[in-house]
Length: 209
Image (cartoon, rainbow, N blue to C red):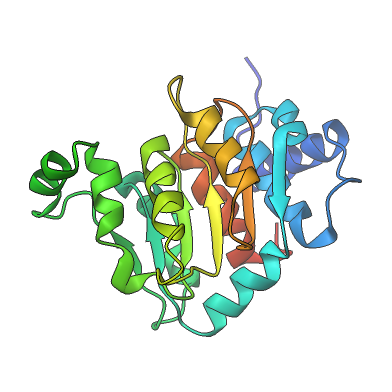
């Protein structure tokens, strides 16, 4: 059986196919690469129609990266997917899900470990890039924390939690009440670490394909 074997050719053909199958006209130019790479990460052109955003996501991300701010993620899978070689030495990726304090904190707060880990984000939040690609409860808890006007404000939120329970609602809450923080998200149950890491990688790569 004949099939395409050259990795560069496969990569090129994939993006050419995506370009034919999605409509980028409703997106600002600064998000076209993000949308394309999100679609590429899951091979589902139809999800482009469900991507939502508020504010200048690209500018907020670029400013945060240029300033060497923190990148905070909700899962190790998201962290593993980020092209860390594209980050400056000042930009650090933080994930607290395995922190020893989390189990007791989760019990105390009567919530999930993913949500409890968000409590540990506070010292790192100011100007940070937030990337949530797993737990809806993490996004819910972040939004709850941001209700406090004294809580440090991140620069931008990449909200891509996934699942049957809470994912749709958490992202709706983000759309309804982001406290003026730029965000990009995906309506419905869809989400996950491949999508979340693809979104931030699109920004790290810029216009490169």
